Structure formats: structure tokens, C-alpha cells
Image 1: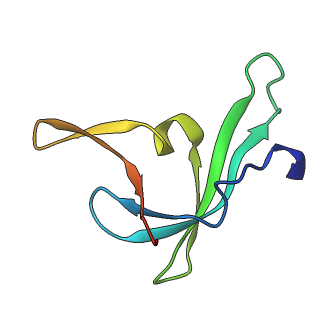
Image 2 (image 1 turned 60 degrees about the vertical axis):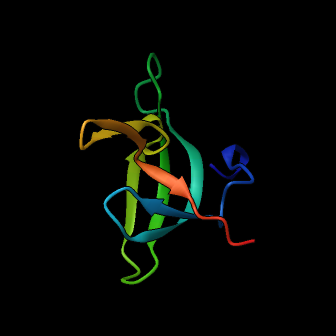
Length: 79
């Protein structure tokens, strides 16, 4: 749904395990279950071109790496 896209699109993110990804769509809503719609992001691996869909909260959330909480995806500062 194009109405739900935000200015984050086009930005580059680095996965905590490595690899860079371009955010194609943020906050895409799956309204299949109207009681609990899910929100997703669509992103693309810059090197391979593979496109992925991930739940928004997980994409923007944190994971534990070596006992330390880190963001799953961190925006790359291209400036």
C-alpha cells in the first residue's frame, strides 16, 4: 500500500552480522487478519539483489550479539 510508505525508503542499512541492504518499503500493512494487522518492511541485499520481507518490529528492533543488545539493522551514514 503506497500510502503507508515513509521517508526511510532508499536508505541503506547494515545487518549486525554484515551485509548492506536498501530499504524498499517501510511499514507495509498486511490486513489479512483485520483484528491484528501485521506491519512489514521490504528490503534488498545490495550485493545479490535478493529481496526480503521482515516484520517491521523485528527489522527495527534489537538482538543479543555476544551478550550485548544491538540493533538488528543499523542505518549506514552515507553523508
